[in-house]
Image (cartoon, rainbow, N blue to C red; front, top):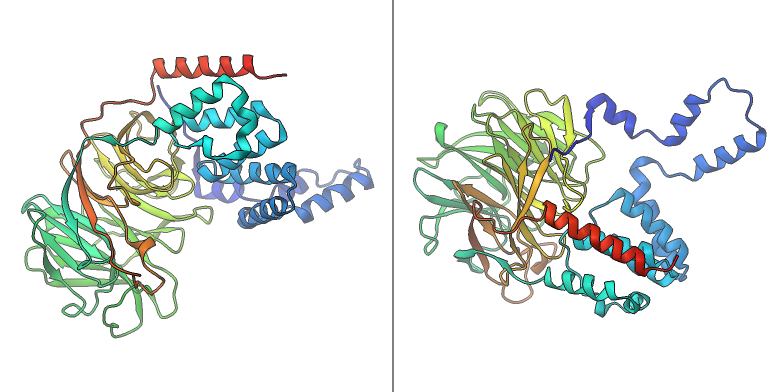
Length: 485
């Protein structure tokens, strides 16, 4: 199966985000046949319609106000708009099930409930009083059971190491295949630590020794050139020494063998809001770096060059993982709310949203990795939190098969990022971000962060296939037969 993905160029992106009212006005310019009443109505609608960058806040406010006054019809209408803007947001999907059930729109409620089940999402509908009208039908028990089962632990994972409170807020990871060392970077102390066996960890670099080092947000190894790349920056949670100068975020290049800092590539200074996050290194040494604060990916073409904007758009919400395909021609970008995008890495002038089956919820991707014509994604903003494998089509622009690798493991407490080593994915199974305050201080002892390991070549369950699609079709037929007209 080949998934057709929408293609857009930089110029087209701008056109697609123009307000509909502006496009309509351009199309009707010169026309004198419209009545004054129609023109007045159109003007009023245009004035009420929010600008593209304000739509989410506009409809969120509408939904909150409607719910507060218990205007369920208006709440559902606003939530439909929110779902249109953020189609992978599980909260919006659940709210639509609740809202339609309360309005007696049982078919619409079951449609959304079935869509969530097909995407492998987990919910315990028995705990939600608003869906009581749905419980009168047999299909409710069937879907509720399937969605409860989706929240059960799954996957053949092992715990490779456990990071205790000595290393608060681990965020970045890289694996050196030559020495079998795992590198970890931390946010609160700005440390880079290493281990070969997962039992003992040693400090490889620290802000006390390397003044340019601040909070560490990603690590990437270029083994062919003996380089360790570090995305670092100043955030309120960083409690290390304040560095000299006013550089807020930068890309650092270390010698992998000696640990010496070879170069710094500043991105943001003074009060600038830019902050480098995920990194990806091409076979020719080119480095790509995502900005966590602005919707831009930067590119460093040579060690003697500087970071330059490569690709971006205001519609992006929060850039997370980056991954390059085997020949470095396609750059995959995870947007936390909107899914996965594909950019022409040779020039950055063309991009696509990765085509995915309707049975895959592509939201909440943090870590993203390329492996043997597949993407490996770590998802933590949906339930269950999970690691999945996406088989790419021949052109790399769409996923033709989705397979869960691990989900709802007992160790999972917001799994985030990791690193590939052959067929093995090492990843943080938990995060400290929600255990600390805005300054990185914890109330009580911080829990351990397990580093888990999984063989990504071992996926036993495939979500997309003829058998499952046929079962889904049968479920739809049963639902339609059971629902009143």
